[in-house]
View 1 (cartoon, rainbow, N blue to C red):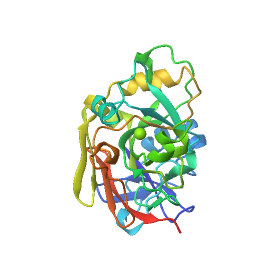
View 2: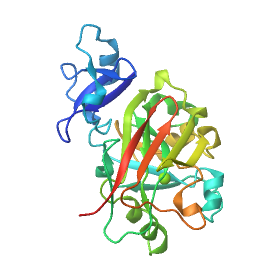
View 3: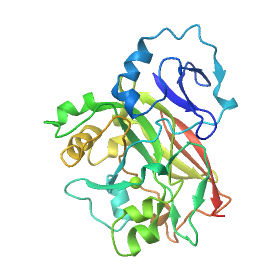
Length: 282
Ligand code: MG
């Protein structure tokens, strides 16, 4: 199953895709795709329902929202592709590097990315994102991690390198500006998707910048979920950005950061793609 949220900002309704371009609303079954409904078994409930008589709508007639409403947390893995660690001038870490970004950065997949005031180093990062399906704490083994995963989506982990790297402190500052985590367009449920060898890519104004595969992840999906659960509780709807491959703007010489007026397209085979216009802060 692929699920999404369609509607104007703040008025999104939960939906399920019935073809590449069509969806049905399921707001008669669940109030939203959110933490409490996922905790109460929304995926099983909607999956078991007969949706065949519901009116189909064209997704293109709607704005698409973040596929999970108000995630409690967005947790990120840094330096999780060897070539990206190298282009960042760092060595691959012996254990996952974990940081968080403000949960309200999660916006609709095609919403605008706003360059922060005075920023000249706003950068892009395509990532496969894990959506947590049930509360996870101290998962005993990597093998048990899959049962805590609801599904997968795409995150654009927008990053301001000046505040992330050059100024004193922790990466969170450069990662949490408003609009810095477009995600979607759908969540593909874990029962219908194998995330371990899929193509992840990103273009800027049509120029291919990132093109890699999740098979190059240093720490795999299940390892990440198990590992993070040793340090914090994970809750349904939480999003884990698993790391970005090489090709970010910071890695070019000269560097290629985002500018107002540019268009970023972010995609992962089997999940979909989305398009963001980059705009200046007003
Ligand atoms: Mg990242």
